[in-house]
Image (cartoon, rainbow, N blue to C red; front, top):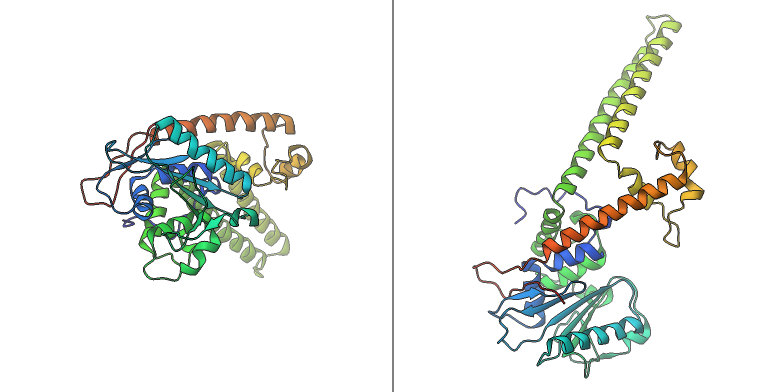
Length: 351
């Protein structure tokens, strides 16, 4: 599936990592990924499945006469008893609204920490060895809980369970496939291929930027060697040597400045992405405190004050969110499994 796709050399932008809100929703709406989840949680069924919610991810059988429970998926950064209560409320809400004959199956995937109190709700009987089963009497058919600790003992098995790989991918949030010990696993390759395809032109632009950077570095290095050779040329007077070297270096500086200006014009959000990487421990961008230092680094040259840059940033982010919303709406188009045999399928509608 990864033929022709250079997965070994590309990196996901940090805002599109697996496990983050948008990428998780887009990835979990993919038919192959739906099949992975349904096959592991319910078993291989001939019926097709879809994602039927707007916010959280949830699967239901397309065949309404097929008496199968819905599958609700929640991905959480840190899990505590408040999160557990949210699972209960969400599951009950889905059951009431859809008048389901069977309570949903809840799948909870936790990226980082889990409180001891939540872990104490575990009960025996999980049908998936790398998941804990949490108490769900009266609100869910079962509640399957995954985190780094539950999957760790099973990561050296061969072959790896596809659902295990999916959970591992979401938890680790790696920018690149090669960062995984299991980088040759077919499911992991499939997931990164899908994420690359989802991002499409964004990744293409990123690869073009990398190519341009390599070209600038090579050209600048070559010119610096010329300047060094001119300065060390003992056949010329010292004054001539210095003048020649300075002229070459001045041309290098002008060349780099020209490329930098061109890239800024082509990618006006680059300064904003830089600012997002400077967030403090409270998650805030330190516009007022750091703006002048950023100016010294060549950032935000078109802005006179931090206030104007900050306002422009918020306008740009508003437009970006609108585009992301459009992307999510496109991804909610009904998805049906191909005619080739598959364990299960799924679709999307609103909740």
